Amino acid sequence: MAAKTKARKKVAKTTVKKAADPWSDVGHGGHLHIGHFLTFQLIRLANAAKSNVTRRYLADFGLSVPEWRLLAMTTRFQPVRFSELVANSSMDKGQASRTLHGMIKRGYIATKSPTPGTRKAGDTAAVPVILTVTSKGRSLYKKVLPVAQRNQARLLEKLTRDERSTLYSVLSKLFSAIGTQELDEEE
Image 1: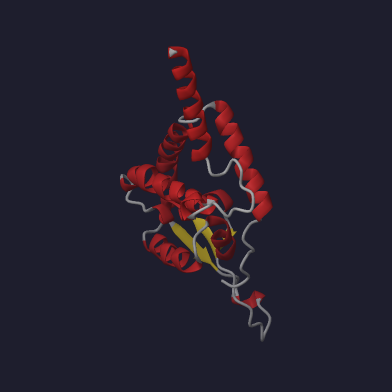
Image 2 (image 1 turned 60 degrees about the vertical axis):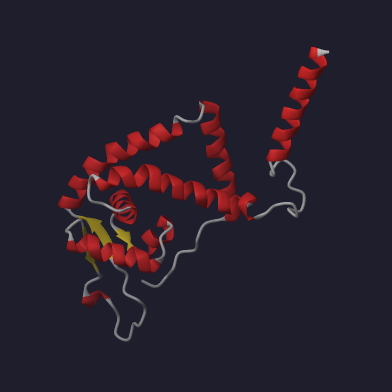
């Protein structure tokens, strides 16, 4: 009799686990509520990581998350057009612009535009703004990067090697399916 009770409890636990996973049988999605939406879960995870991981170590360097993102991406891709940076940083143009102005004031990033003689008369297209990192910005980046890498590694270590590999594959597959933001031609 005790064996039957254990067997029933085991079946009940298995059933509960399957019922608790709203994604195992998606169908047409009629059973999904906002808390089950993939986009909702990804944003929740990103916000939790930003608040509980990234902000904590950036505070020691006097940087906000957008400032670090702008510095890191500019360092990686410099010289880089502001429009390309915005398109690849997941920041909206207004936030990126405000962040950039602060980083320029603090001496971490420099901007340049094409010299006036290189533009044709009557050219009304937006002038591209090119970003580069200053020596002060490079110095800060070199201090923050190892701390950021350690913290990101600690977060990834919460998953097994197979889970990390699967997660990377799944994210890549979703990016391929959804696409990326189109580059904004205006500065």
